Amino acid sequence: MNASASFKNRLRVTSVTDHMEASELNAPVLQDKFGRRLHYLRLSITDICNFRCNYCLPDGYQCKTEALPLTVSEIQTLTTAFAALGTRKVRITGGEPAIRRDLPQIISACAQTEGIRKAALTTNGYNLRKHIDAWAQAGLSALNVSVDSLDPQRFHAITGHDRLHAVLGGVDRALELGGLQVKLNSVLLRDYNGDQLTPFLEWVKDKPVAVRFIELMQTGDNAVFFRANHISGAEIAERLEQQGWTLVPKDIDAGPAQEYQHPDYRGRIGLIMPYSKDFCATCNRLRVSSQGKLHLCLFAEAGVNLRDHLRNGDVVGTVAAIRRAVEGKLPGHSLHEGFTGAMSHLAMLGG
Image (cartoon, rainbow, N blue to C red; front, side, top):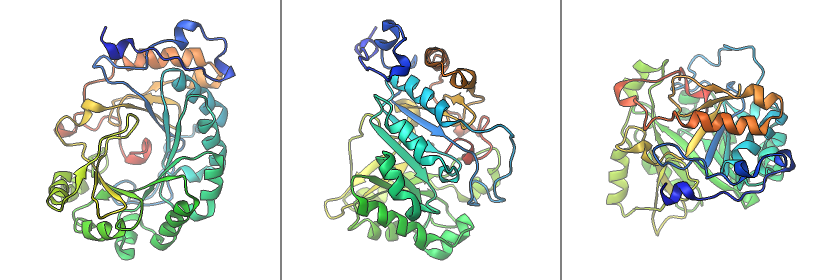
């Protein structure tokens, strides 16, 4: 067994797990058979979204399930189990998480789980300014806001909503609060924002915000749109390097973005390039759907149902199920071959 595999997790978890055996609590940090250590959970709490982004839900959300999403209690059991396995960061995603009125309680449940060091949220920012204070008070430590263009007309064309000013107002309020790590997500779309690097660079000149450009990914529903609009992030990386931007070392619980910094800018630029070579080699995350299914990859064929354990408050059973499932994590996705697994649209698992 290598050094990383023998690393022991000494985490004390909440009283829910007081009955767990010492062998469970002192087990190695969750690691797959390729040696990748999994510190990061992306938790979808709803697949409903109120935006109609042309790359995800151009016709709006179409209800395909009658099952209710995970409750706060089930989420508490889930995060406790993941914390016992060495997870340190939980990102709450959707759909649009703010659709749920109990979002502050969900944030609090994640943030207060012993062992979880960072409770993060990804949102479209529709009502960000109205709710960000409550989210911060609940324990939110990191915020990602989807902003695909800084031009109001283009933003409207992409999202179906004329709310750029309101969204950016919410971002400003998040920065005013202090203590929140704030990032913007922008999906690269050749016909809609492919020429928008310069406006974003100007925007981060004096703002302590990272803007991450995300390569458009093919899903089961967007094949034609994908072929027309996919841009390689490598094109932007080359331009950044020519302008003096340099790569920043990643934190252990960081997502897949390669972040660049420049001495003349307060903000940073990140690139998420799922079609790049060895993209999956440093994967450190697992995903759970709003219905309680564990997905080993965004583009996995199917999920492993954890809900019976979660409904019963069964932390031990949840831990065991996660461990068994991780043994089947593959070395990488097959996006290059056009395989999209069970992913019909990005709102299913938070992208």
